[in-house]
Image 1: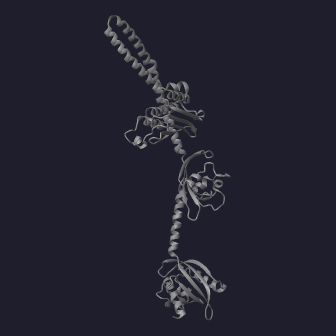
Image 2: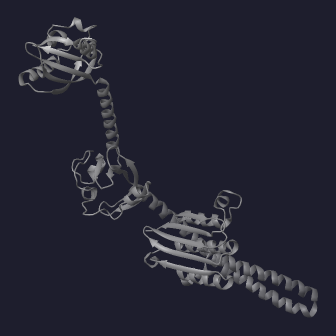
Image 3: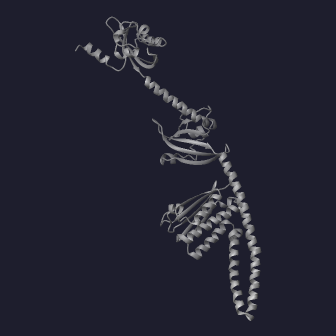
Length: 468
């Protein structure tokens, strides 16, 4: 086969439009070019003015002509360009082209190879529209949203971040600067003391936490989640939400709860005092009179004396029950010793009477101005937990920690007893009153409780109570 015919066949079967122009006349074209220009075969186009008669879009023909003229006039080895083109079917195509000067028999011509990139352009526009939509959504949010790479580079930030973190523009964007995020966002010379990079990147898990910004006087909730950016280092998505109103609502609820608990406690104290001082004294007086009557009856009527003595014993039980009820309504140890001393004295009794080794430590509690109601509720929680240890745990040691960790008081009670199946106790038939009472008291204090236990591995309560 003739080499020129072979070359023509190869070019004619390429899936990219190819042409050769000499003095603006089209002297060669393959089938792909004919299809792009709206012709059935290349022969219909040959030897016509390519830019005036063949090229279908007069609005962009000058761009096409100028590129080819540039090649002819300057003799450049290669010129690349891209442009839109409206074909004969009135559909807009995006084409990319390369042109170079080639020698012909009598002069030089321009060899051009085109590529229809319409679908790529549409996909790029769709991606750009999606990106713009995403940016608009993120900019409409009142949350701070930004992306930080593992080496502290700020990769993206939304409008709210720009406004509140002094980035200047008030618009979303990306940062190509080498300035680290802690300097851009906080004006610091080193990573923030509360930076969560270690948990996010080393442990590869989301981190949720809260903090109070003293400069802004606001509470914020933060979610940090590891993500992967194509072509970039590992990064984390950070969403920061202003929860000051939520905290204010929680404060109002806690204040109302404290008022309700205070009224409840005052009523309990009043009932306790009446039981102890009024009813208790009357019962004691009645018992004394009954004992006198019993002594007198022994001389004349033995049966009456026996009945009187039995009634006196019953009355003694009633007095004891009344005294216990009064003390239960108002813990006497709390009134005399305070929370920590009351716990210490109660643990000493547990150690002496039941042979359980106890370890109690407190830290920072003296600095907290707890109202009496909270102290009493914490003591009740302690009593319930210790009663559970004595009755059910068969433990040889119990450890108690009471620690201030702003903004919470953390109360931990742990034993080395037999433990229990946690799911069975929480959701089954064995959910005892002790754990239920403790949980209810924690909820009343606005706190949270976590229970850890396995059979044969003891049990642990961790309670967090908010305070101000």
